[in-house]
Image (cartoon, rainbow, N blue to C red; front, side, top):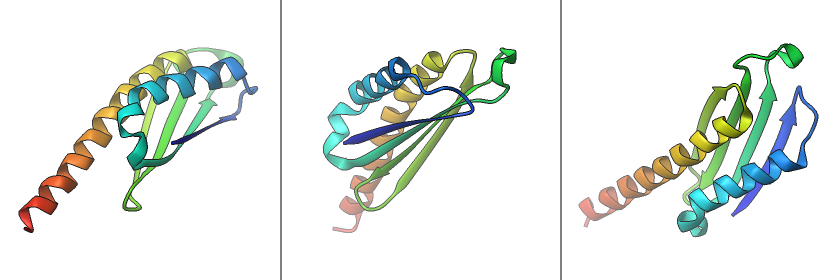
Length: 107
C-alpha cells in the first residue's frame, strides 16, 4: 500500500507527512493487500489567520477499481488525520464486507 502526502496552501512538513503515513498505515494495515494506494492532501484554508481551517482529505483506491474519499476539517491537521484514519478503516471494512456479501448472494 503506497501512501502519498501532499500539501497545499501551507509549507510542506516532513513531520506531518510522517504522522499521516504512520496513522493511516497502522489503521489500514490489515487491509493493505486490498488497497492499491492512498493519497492524503493537507491544506490550510485560511492561511496564517488560525482557527478551525486545517482541511485533510484522503482518496483510496481499493481492489476492483473503486475509489473511496473522506474529508475532515479541524484546528490541527493531526487531529483531523487521526479521525480520518479511523473513518478510513471503518469505510474500507464496510465496503469489502458489502462486496463479500454481494458475491455470496450470487452463488
